[in-house]
Structure formats: structure tokens, C-alpha cells
Image 1 (cartoon, rainbow, N blue to C red):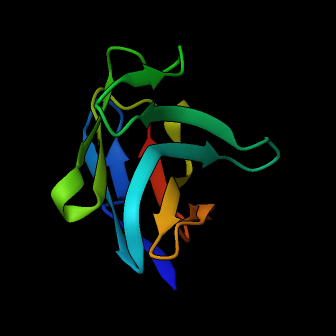
Image 2: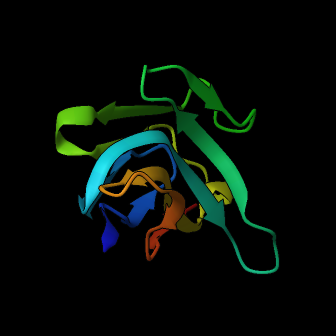
Length: 120
């Protein structure tokens, strides 16, 4: 059984910062790609940022230069540092990870989501 548990969401004023964390636990052999997605009411879930095991990153254009994704492979944890937050960043943020379990099978896993609200 593999779980992703997110933390760090909350309410912040525009221009402020938040740091999201997502820890994977369970029967894990290795974790490939990890990423953060977000979904706001009436919109499709969108990719915000992703990072490979080796540390290569990619970002949605809307968050480039404001958000930073990082990971700690020893802790099976991915982070999202969000700076200069805007009201349009308000959404539920979901962690995603491509995990190879102890039996060698690869599956995609999702966290439960954490709410980020940016007030103007």
C-alpha cells in the first residue's frame, strides 16, 4: 500500500508565500517523476510543476519564476515553494508520483489535495 500525504496549504494574501510538502510512504522501491497539479472550480486539473528523480524540472508558464519544485529522495518527499502568490493561484493542489513498488510494478499515485487560497 502506497500513500501520498500533502501538507502546507492555507490562506495567504496576494504577494505572500506558501510551501507545500508531499511525503510518499508504504511499499516503495523507487520513485520516478513527482509533480504538483492544481484544480480550481469549473476548470480542469492542470500540471503546475514536475521533477524527475535526477532533478530535472519543468513548470507551467503561469508559475515560472515564482514557484520552485524540489525533492528529497531519501525522504520520498516533494516540495513546492510558492512565492509572489496571486489570487489566480487559488486552487486545490494535488501531489502526483510515479512509484515503483516493492514487487517492481509501476503505478501513478495521487495525494488527497490541499487547499491554497490567495486573497486579493
